[in-house]
Amino acid sequence: MKPIFSFAASVPFVTFSLFNIFNTEKISTGMTTKEFFKNYAEALLSYSPEKISEFYTVPMTVYSDKGAQQVTKDSEVAGFWKEGIKPYEKSKIVRTMPEIISEEHLSKKVTICKVLWKNYDGSDKMIAEETNFYILFKEISGYKIDGLIIMS
Image 1 (cartoon, rainbow, N blue to C red):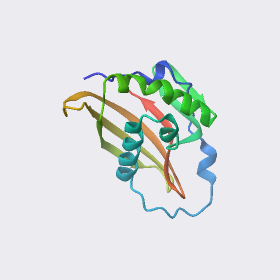
Image 2: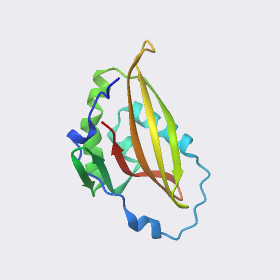
Image 3: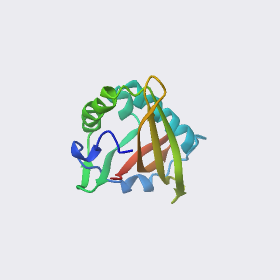
């Protein structure tokens, strides 16, 4: 199945914010990546750009076949999702299942996950699936998306 929406078509590109690596604050959260993506899925299903944006850091970078786009403001992330949720709303997605295909901890704070998303409608029929890579940065409050690689 093909993705419903090509994020790269409407997203200002985002960059992995390397300065976050040098943050020396103690990481105290016990959140796993599985819990993070479960919470992120709930935000996605809220169809609220503001709730979804809370899962991202800025600056961040989005990578796709169209190149790399950097997002430098929270308002740009919300603006992206204001448009990005429309195809999902139109498809009437009411459930999504994130499955972590691979996970690599590059450092104490940086993790890359390959995630398969299966999207279902109200009759519990899978109507789409898509796979993306997420560069996660672990903050005191938990993981945040610091970079996104969109697969085509």
